[in-house]
Every structure is written in structure tokens, then in C-alpha cells.
Image (cartoon, rainbow, N blue to C red; front, side, top):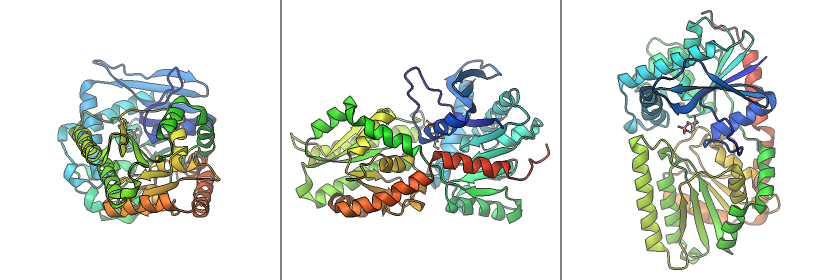
Length: 453
Ligand code: F6P
């Protein structure tokens, strides 16, 4: 059976083999690499008159089938309903959620257009696997076109409780659309419970009105990332950073510049740590790497300014001519560089205010040296916390608690670091990206027949 992966962003490798930002793109590429198949979605390009049919490029075992979208589609579908309404709502941020009917109908329209484009190349035995919140109505649109293939959906971000989700206009339509899938996957049992209750508690809903739902936490390519981290010892960016750092200990954070990631709160927690531990000044540094993301959305632009202000304030009040507490870099790095920096960091700070999974937490652990690993400080509101109990689990809303965890991590005896890391790493080897892909595909192929069109 051919696997057809569908996601908003398709990450075709460029000439140097670099890949796009975002854990999802990295994971899907790893998922398709061995098995092969088609990866369908938006090219990332905006065209005044986009072609109806996908452009297909074959690279190894994977065919990349992409379509452009019109400027209004980008505004209404991607920047609009997906990222101004669904994203904040699903990250429990009702106050940031902006709904517009025009954007909602743009979102539905683009899903219809994408479905039409895929329907033209789909084969009867293809297994279709749709990813993330941009494409919730995709299967319903395919069904309308008479497609009866097995279709699964994986929701990479949190599914909030119905009191939050139900406040979003259009939420009933989205729940109805989800029923067109044969299987719906979410990251955690909490998300699965929230989604199932959404079906049960929505006006006129019943528990048996839900599609089949499974909680299946996404993994990383643990073996490959570990090797990348070992090789990165000789990477020039990593080597220069480490030689400049000297004997100072490194605390690292890597996230897209997104309000859900708790970056400003993290900087302030690090400030709190410095204030509470003056003896640490001069010998610890936080390196925060945050490539800009969705900057045309106002909240993201504001976040950029807010991080600059917070960073300036902390560095200017706590730094001295020979040392700055925080180094903040707003650009993307290759996986090779990140793997090497993770390997050399004594603490991995992964403190989102809310996150579907967070693959940085997993990559940080995979990159560590078995005989001298660093410590992961992890938000209890990241999906990864349900699996990674041996991390130091924190509430990112409590800066004192995060500051204390940084201190505990830096003081943790080697034996304890090794014991915690071993359990975390074994978990990452057992439940890696191959396990995740295979488990979803098995569940989908074993699932009930597609609803009749
Ligand atoms: O799951 C998180 C996610 O929204 C992915 O769907 C997406 O590819 C990634 O973050 C990066 O965001 P964007 O595609 O908007 O740059």
C-alpha cells in the first residue's frame, strides 16, 4: 500500500540537504524516508493564479507533490483561521483567538482545493495520512469527491477541553468534519480525553458520535540524531561556540519564536536564577535559539519586540563587560549544529506554556553523552512530559520553580544524571519515529471501513 502523507508544509530537501523549520516537517521526512510514498501539501509559495494540479518531484523513494496558493488563501487560510484562530484556541489562549467568518470560509475553501488537487493523483489502494490543524476538513472534502480510501488524521498540537474549543465559532463544523476520518491520532491521553468529550458534550452529540481516537506520542529518529550529535563534535559552529564559552556552563533553549513556547517567561526565569544565585554570574550562560515564525501575525511580531526588550533589560542589568547572561539568536540552524550544541549543554530548557509534544525535549536527550549527560528541565504542559517523567518537570508559569530547577540541574550529581538519562533515552529508542509511523499505519489499516461517500 502506498503511503500518501498530507500536511500544510511540505519540506522538500533543498540542494544542500537542509530541511525546513519545525519538528513536524523533520518527523514526517524521517517517517517517509524508509517507507517511501507521496508527500502532498502547500509549496510555501504564493502565486497570483496558482495551477490546479500539483507539481511532482521525485527524490529517492519520496514523491513531493506541491501546490501554490493565492495571496487571499494565504491570508485567510494560513495566517487567518489556522494561525489566528485555531492555533491560539488549541493552545488554551482564548484571549488571543481572533475569529473572522471570511477567514473560516477561506480555510474551508483551501481544504476543498487541496482535496481536489490530491484526488487527481490518488490511487485506489493509497493509504492517506493527513497531518495537523490546517487540514481538519480535508477528509470530508475528499469524501465529497467520492474518495473511499482509508484516511487517517494526526493532530500534532494540543486538543483543549470543550469549554475552550467550543468557544471557537465553527468548532461544531470541525468536529463533524473529523468524522470523515477512519482514525484520529493525538499526542497524549489528555488530548484524547478532551477530544472524545468534545464529541460527547457538543450540542446534540453523544460519545459514540466520535471517530476512532488513539493517543500516540510522536517520536524522533533517535539513532540518527544521536549519530549527528556525535559527529557534530567537529562542526565549526559548535567548536567555535564551545571554545568561546570556555569553562562556562551552557543552558540551552531552542524554539520557533512563538508565544506558546514561553520564551519571555524562560528569559525571566533565567534572570530569577541569576538573581538567586549571584555566585553563578559569569560562569553560566543561556543560549536561546529562536528562528522567527509567522511574523505577519500581529502577536508574533509583538513577541519579537517583547523578547528584545526583555533580553536587553536582563543583559544590561546583570551582565558585565566580560560576560552576558543570555545570548539570543534569531535564526535557524541545521540539525547537525543543534545536535552538537545540545550535546555540550549542561541543561536543556524546554518550558512551553502549552505544547502538543515538543520534539526539542527528545532531541536534547538523544544528543547527550551517555557517561556525562546533561539534565532536561521540562514543562508539565508539553505533551512530552507524559512520557519523560525522569526530566525535572516544572510549571513554566512559576519563575521561581523554573529557576530552582535550573539550579538543581546544574548541581545534580553525575550518578543521578546518568540514571535519569538512561531511562529517558531507552524510552526514546523504544518509541522512536519508526515505531510511531508503524503504529499509526497499523491502527489505520486495521480500522473500520471508510464512511460511504
Ligand atoms: O505542529 C506544529 C506546526 O504548526 C506544524 O504544523 C508546522 O509545520 C510547524 O509548526 C511550523 O509552523 P509553520 O508551518 O507555520 O511555519
